[in-house]
Length: 206
Image (cartoon, rainbow, N blue to C red; front, side, top):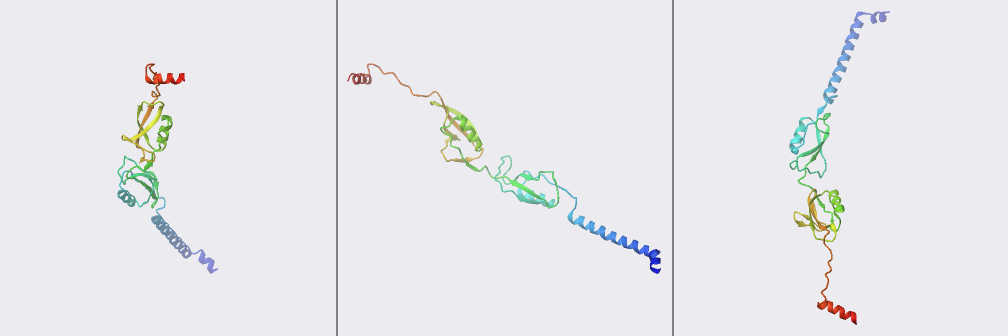
């Protein structure tokens, strides 16, 4: 009876309330600590790093508690200075969590050297797509007297003839010298009084 009387007593209810408040305080403190240390739900806006030097970009990421990784790439953009950021993943303005890794692509000093397709002897229709697919641009077309129309007679870079195996930076402008189709073999008629004609007649009578 004494236990039942104690359970329904005012003292028991006070102790129960104090215990519940103590447990609630512990749970609240634990949740607050987890939220502060994990930044649960907090999002960070990715800054626009394009055009920044690598040092400046890393400082901007560190201020926002974001990490980084450099992409191993051969990209080159002439609109950006050497060793500046030309691309980033995620994109500027994206919302990410703390310590998210931002991938950076850094501008090279220039386009990589690539072997020029040797298109001499091919037609213009064949040469143009071959050069463009290799990453080059077709520049000035000049024509020269030749029997085959639009056949590539030579390829040039800055007025220098290119040979098979030559390499140039990608996007280089390559000029083509083409045949105009007006050339050919011209057979001249022989004068009957010429020594050659007389020799031919003598041979025919033998």
